[in-house]
Image 1: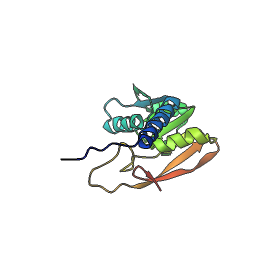
Image 2 (image 1 turned 30 degrees about the vertical axis):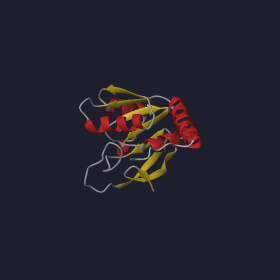
Image 3 (image 1 turned 90 degrees about the horizontal axis):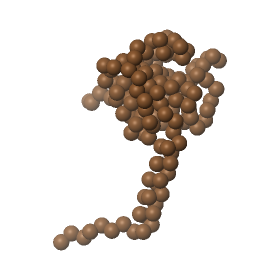
Image 4 (image 1 turned 180 degrees about the vertical axis):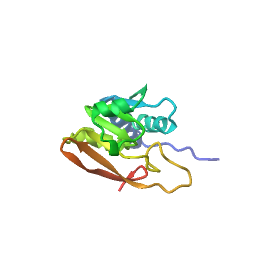
Length: 156
């Protein structure tokens, strides 16, 4: 006869509190508007990553190059999709945790970019292939600098 697991009152209260904090955080996150090519699968995977991390995402299927030009994304930082959130531009496969940090810290700049399409970045996971180490770049009129470094989806 197996013994049934009965969590203590403390565990239940802590679990409910954690769920409430996560739900409150998700409600406080601004909506992401992501522009992507309608046939891009990796862009869809990146959108799913953001949604899994609590963001509400509106997807606009349209040519992305005019959006990049209008928003000031430098050509050498370009990737396959461009998004806007909280007054910032998000270019490429930027991890949700970096976007959340950006929204909390509010640094001066136009936005964040992950140039190219690094293997292992959110939406670019390839089973059986080691994830790349890549930089998340803060860019704007005053230049560029490294905002974060990741290996796959983990900050390093």
